[in-house]
Every structure is written in C-alpha cells, then in structure tokens.
Image 1: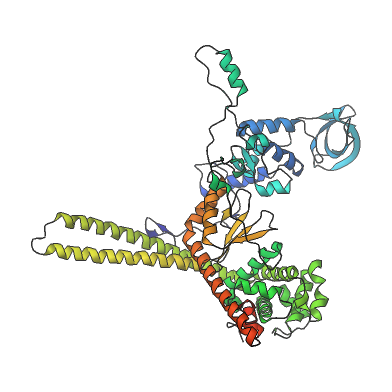
Image 2: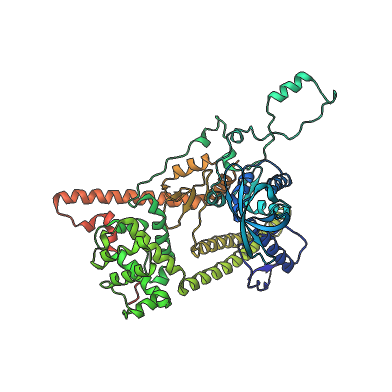
Length: 584
C-alpha cells in the first residue's frame, strides 16, 4: 500500500474506462474528473486529423525550427488551399454553392475533380466532375488548436521538431535530418542586436556578419542525429564491434530471446525447469529430436489445455486426450499449426506429421515457438502470475522505502550522538558507554542497509517483463537479461542482432555514448545504474566459457585415446536436459 506522510494511504479506484496510453492535455488546476474529460476532448480533437493529411503535415513538422505557433500558422495556411480525396467543402453547382466531397482527383495539369454532392446527413445524392476553380475553400479541414495538439502529440522534441520514429516509418517521413541542419547551418539566430551606431550600423561589419552564419547557443540534450562530435572526441567516435556468432539466423535472435526469457520467467507456471540460452540455441539448430525442445512444446500445450481456451476447444472437437506425452506431442503441434492459419507455418504440418520436425528450418521452428508463447501469454495462469508478481513488487518496494527511511533516521541519530559524545568529558567512564551505544547503533544501521540491498535483489527477481535499457543515436536497442552474461544490441528494424561479452567492451561502449544526445544520454544513465550487475555478469560468463573450453580440450584429448560419447562435449549439454519440475 502507498504511503502518505509515512502512513498507509488508500487510493481511489481508477475509472473503468481510463486508458493508460492516453497522454495529459497540459491544462492545470483541474480535478481528476475534469482532467479526464479534458483529456478525452483533446484526444478526440487530435484524432480528427484526416488520414490523407498525415503524411504532408508530418513532413512540414519534421525538423522544423519554427516555434509552435509559427509552425501551426504555416501548416494552417498551407492547408487553406489543400485538396485531397475525402475532403468535404463547397463548390459551385448550377450557379449555386453546395456541399460536396472530393471523390477523386483527375488530371495533372488543369485540375479536375470528381465530387459527390452531399445532403445534410452527409449522404451522397449524385456525382459530377468539376474544375478546380469551382471549388470554394471556406476554411482548412482542421483547426489551429487541433494542429497544435497534433504537433505536440506527434513529436518527441521541439528544438527542432522531431516526430516519433514509429510515425516517421508509417508515413515514409525521412528520419535523417537535412544536411544543412546536421552541420549547424540550419540553426541560426532569428534576430540580431541593434547596434549603437545607428540602424544601419557599420557597413563593413554588416557585410561580414551577413556572410557568416551566427549559430544559436544549442541547449543540450538534443536529438542524437543532430549532435556532431568534434574530431578531438576520439572516445565518442570509437565503438567496439559487435559479436554476431549466433547459430540461428540474425533476424531470428529476437524470437530466440523471447522464447527463452518467457520459459525462464514462467517456469513454475509451465512446470518447466530452467535451461541456458546457449542450450536452447543448440537444441533449435540440432537436426535430431531432443528432449529440451519436446519438453518446451509439451509444457506450453499443457498450459493451453489448462486454460480451456481456443486450443482446448479444438482438441475436444478432435476428441484428443488432454494429456500430451513425449510420443504424441507432434500431433498436438499439428493441431496448433492448423489453429494459427498462417501459411508459412501450416505448410510444415505434413513434415511434422511424418515425424521430421527436427528437419524444419531453424527460423520456422522459432516462429512456431513464438506463436506458442504469444498464445500462452494470454492464458489465465500467466496473467495471475503477472498480477501476483506486481503485487509482491509493490509490497517490497513499500517495505524498502520504509526501511531506507528508518536507516537514514538512525544514521542521523547516530551522528548526532557521536558528536555529543565527542564534546563530552569522560570523567566517570560514561564516555565509553556512550561510544559503545553509538557503535551498536551504527551496526544496526549497516544491517538495515544490507536489508535494503536484499530487498532490491528480491524486487529484481520478481521482474518478469523485459524491456530495452535504451537506444543509441541510430535507434539500436540495448538488452540485458539477468540470467545471461551478454549485452545484446538489436538494430532499429529488428533484422540484425549482435552482443558484447566482456567488461572491456562495456567500458568502451559507455565511453562512446554522447550525452549531448537525448537517446544516448538516457542509455548511458541506465548503463551507469546497472554497471556493477552487467559487468559482473559479463565476467562470470567469460570465466564459464574459459572453463568450458578447457573441458572441450580435455574431451578432445581423451577422444584420441578412447572413443568419447557425443554427450561428453559441453556444447552438447542440451541433450542431457531433464525437466525436474515436470508435473507427472
């Protein structure tokens, strides 16, 4: 329960129709209910921007250096004469003005338009072709206020304006800033200080100033693509190369991580004991049936059956047994593939039914597992576990805050007592007694600090949902999983993956991040915060790899004397997997 003035405080239940994705309208001095109504109005107004206008309006916004009101006026004036399909306006019909809707734009020279004539209820009663000169523009299709709201909602920064990456991709808006802006030439002062020697000033100075650009003092951080490191910033120009030695295709690494993270996060719900990412990757690429993959599929099938959803209904229709075995699991996989109705997956049904699942392409295996995971995430047991973890995290966080407060209070009391003790004279041995009390107090305080650290560890263990640490200037996403000693990097289009695996690489990476950019500043802060955990995980994995290499060398030497079994090789450890949490 949250605290208010160090006392438990009960929150009001949020409205049932509250959308967590909605953004604040920016108005102040409103009650919660008034703010909610105001926000609904703001969102509804922003959504009135016609789809046909999205691309041209976003192009005018992207990297504009105008102020908000200037930009609104520019767009508003541009839309004053804009004509697009779906636009409703007025036109001359038999000498009179009538409401119409642009149905089609005809011709390329002299503009001709096919229009539908409208009744009051917006019903089209007839159509005809008219000239552009017959159109009557009374006002733009959107108001200035709607444009203002839209600009704020569509952008991530305003000096210059930069629209959100997803909007840019959706409507084909260039992400790279103009060349003149990248080199600072587009950021110029809007006015110059009037000189004391008259309105015209010194002609020679005026000519010199006209020839040279006077740049505005930039307030950092700004969009990363606008930051240009100087030639002296060698660290900022040097970024360590990524390792890409994955066995699965690079575009499938995201699916591999998703499946692995889900299985470990919800292992108890699935009754599936943990396994390493490397073991899963090797099992996926193995061209023979193996217990690890069979156990993963079987565990998810049992979860879907337990949930009694669509998959359960299909099995009941086909009169399947509700107990999946290591022998019959392929039949249940075929039923699931049929349920997906995805051609890329369903065309593998015959291969699976014949018993050749292991021969399916690696990327298809991962896509099948991804579909299974996405279906499993929607089940009641998983949702209940998520709710339980969230409640536990909130309770621990409240305990941590209270423990931190008490530790600070006791520390302050200890310091005050120590100061008083130093000022007093130890005439009758009382000084020693006071010092002992202070030492005990300090010991208790340190014990509470360790307690807070323990709570932080427990809170981290309860974390289920993984999210990237941040993005670099090129929108590459950085991922760290506490169970895997690598820092993964995902390209902006999710088609390329790589990783860093040593502390030295992590240090060089952090030195190369430019804190003048919005994204890299946020990423560096997150890496600074988690530096100890990430670096310790990287070093631990490096030691494990060294140990594994020594074992592989030992196996190789032994195989020259005695025929060693394939399972003795550490890289084949996934073949030894046993599901210790299996529900029999």
